[in-house]
Image (cartoon, rainbow, N blue to C red; front, side, top):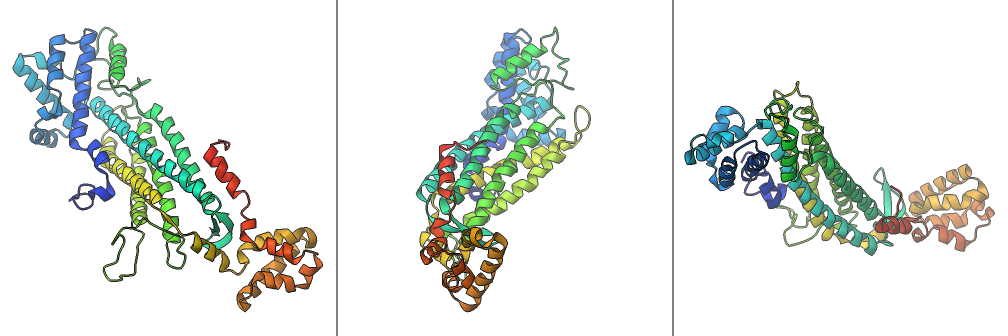
Length: 454
């Protein structure tokens, strides 16, 4: 194998059958043929090429008519596959009537066909991404609603911070994915654009001023937008979608990181979906490794690294480039296949996630009240002053750890705390994690209702 996405063993982990099909030789060549057939059709409609030629071209332009062995040989010789495809069309159509095939590819250049095919592949990719995003957000909404009030500890610098709810944690993830859906919608209008300009983008080969008419008709035929001007060496469209995939997989990787940490034996707050032998060790029978999260982490990091290459590919020379363009050929298929695999693994993780609320409750108690020290400080501050109270509670938290005593016990025995006038019942309330989740529930509801600003 040359890539894990080509591997019989690994390909359904690091890719998916649907996205692999989009970026296959067969699909890419099909889009080359679609371009050529559509071009001939619209040019016949406006009188640029003979209708007989267009009909013959359309009749041939099906991928089953392509000799892929010959196409490989021609690509190795020429350096690009488009001319090899065009030659096969010309040869076949000329065999029907000499000279008829010479109307193939009229006024187009190799990059017009290649870029437009890439845009069509990216359109298919974004359709898959959109569908999986919708599935992810749907299941996240379920998790948010189910665990809106499920208490757990928030963590800062990997240390226990303050109480919150698991629904709040999932709602933050949901809001992020909803922003990605907005980004996806915005990107489409800039990305799904035809490339058809000829050698230097000026449409000089289409005579009598019909170049723009032909361009508009071809864009309509392919259901793409008309470019405002040629973009052969202006690659912001491609770099932008690569950046979007980096953002998207970054979010998935952040989620996977949290799951890995929460699955640690000493934490045990969630588990990945289970079935027999999933994540098992060859030597340690007790282990249940976070396999999905591991793959998400690895694939997401790779997408971010590969996406950086697309920014290098933007630095192209003059009107047609010498090398940077081919960077896209190398990394785009990998970026897209890995991205869809990341999203699918993330969906599977979310939909089957096991949430251990008892462990979350247990972890809230291991600091013997330290997790609510901020609540205690803010409750006493109006009486004793914020800085004085901070230092006092700091000292009591230290004693709680050293003496293995609940913070509440030390608060009730402290003279300064008694001087504040707070009753034992009030101190118990301050030390109850359930009373210090802030607006966790309200914010979950706001995300679920989509009423938050922005």
